[in-house]
Amino acid sequence: MTPPDPIPRWPTSLSSLVLLIAATIPLATAATPPLTDHSKCGCFLTNGPEPRFFQFHDFWDFRGQTQNAGVPAIKATAEANKMAPFSSKYFSSQTWEKKWITNFWDNQENTRPDATALMVMSRNNVYLEANADSKSDSSPQTWLTLRTSRLKDPQTNEEFQTAAEIESFHKVKFASVRMLARTIGAPGAITALFTYRHADRLMDVQESDFEVRTRDIDTTIHYTNQPGYNDTGDPIEAATSNVTLPGGLRWTDWAVYRLDWTPGNSTWFVNGQQTLQKAFQAPRDDSKITLNAWSDGGRWSGNMSLGESAYLQVQWLELVYNSTESGAGKDGGIHKRSTGGRLVERAEAKNCTAVCSIDETPNTGQPVMLWGAGNGRREMMGGAAGWIPYLVALGLLWVSAR
Ligand SMILES: *[C@@H]1O[C@H](CO)[C@@H](O)[C@H](O)[C@H]1NC(C)=O
Ligand SMILES: *[C@@H]1O[C@H](CO)[C@@H](O)[C@H](O)[C@H]1NC(C)=O
Ligand SMILES: *[C@@H]1O[C@H](CO)[C@@H](O)[C@H](O)[C@H]1NC(C)=O
Ligand SMILES: *[C@@H]1O[C@H](CO)[C@@H](O)[C@H](O)[C@H]1NC(C)=O
Ligand SMILES: *[C@@H]1O[C@H](CO)[C@@H](O)[C@H](O)[C@H]1NC(C)=O
Ligand SMILES: *[C@@H]1O[C@H](CO)[C@@H](O)[C@H](O)[C@H]1NC(C)=O
Image 1 (cartoon, rainbow, N blue to C red):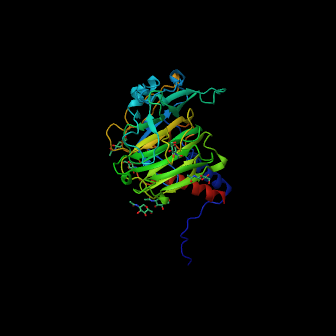
Image 2 (spheres, rainbow, N blue to C red; image 1 turned 30 degrees about the vertical axis):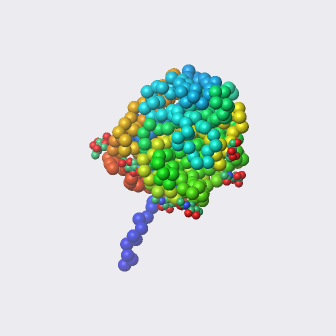
Image 3 (cartoon, rainbow, N blue to C red; image 1 turned 90 degrees about the horizontal axis):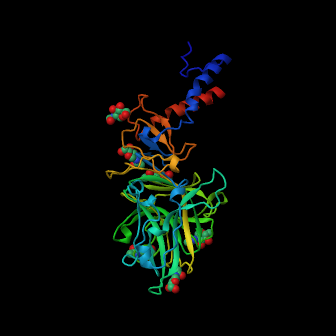
């Protein structure tokens, strides 16, 4: 007697092969998941080497804001910069202010040890700007600009730098943040996207950042898990990396910059390509998300020439994140295509029977449903079981192709 074959035999006749292939099609097409409304998403699963589930999703689209666009004239004095009003009602809207703080402060009290210039963050330097080159429907009409400029104050006769910063209203704990952005302008500035946790002692600061130094050659950028210097001002080499942009890109080109802050790691991408992963000093505790454009005449930024400016320009900003703060992820759920683009989308915190993706979507800002509610799946958060249909589909395709 021959022992029973432990391996089930796959059908080999042509007709059963056709049936088998047909049977796999619904599963295989599930690999290009359907677009959905993000109110239907319980959570968002990211791709890359550190895939994680996140509760909340916000999408800020600055491309259609013609009614709020306008470049404010640079204010001449440090005082006028510090006291400046919002550049448009967009930044005083509830939608914006529930999620972002447009900062105004100066570095007189809390200066970096190597700073040589007064730096004034101003609401006047955060504005929506019309695209002067907008020729076709596909090019953006507007974008968000963060501006920094070197001036001489006629009141004090001293040079100073005026700068720009927005900071998330809520702290997040772990996030994947992406922006379609570019940096242009004069040497002597830093433009940045980062997580930030303030601390009185430098060594207690937690920060994971992406930075452009406008005095570098235009093909290299910097990634740092701060602090990058210790208390005696010596560099902490493992904290920072100088990275060449992939694909011959320059930071003056539009590109999607992504930072994944996950437990124990920071992972950075440019246009979907992983550029660096750093476990060293990866932030651990609740942090704000910040974007800025600045210079303080110190060793890192250098000095900008008098009368010059540099700009961080952002077409859209997208975040998936977790937060323990009440109110995070809430509100601002306005869908205003007719008045010029989506402002914010959101997902309620709820148990995650419906898992969405912002990576697999063909339409940036609108998630796709990877697997949904109502199919009997429960407690998918943190589980890998949801990938089984895809693996099965792939396996069947592989088998049937033999
Ligand atoms: C986000 O929160 C959910 C729900 O608590 C959890 O399952 C998930 O693992 C969290 N994500 C990260 C990156 O910690
Ligand atoms: C800073 O780093 C330098 C070089 O590694 C070291 O000699 C110095 O003791 C460090 N200072 C502090 C305060 O840790
Ligand atoms: C980063 O690398 C580029 C290219 O090698 C170099 O020109 C630049 O000076 C470096 N910047 C820093 C801060 O090390
Ligand atoms: C950080 O990433 C590395 C490389 O992918 C991985 O080996 C390590 O386990 C990660 N650390 C944590 C805490 O997940
Ligand atoms: C910036 O200018 C100040 C004042 O002229 C000077 O003291 C400082 O060394 C300069 N900084 C750099 C990094 O060159
Ligand atoms: C999770 O959500 C589903 C669908 O909204 C609901 O039927 C289920 O009762 C919820 N489970 C828990 C534990 O809240």
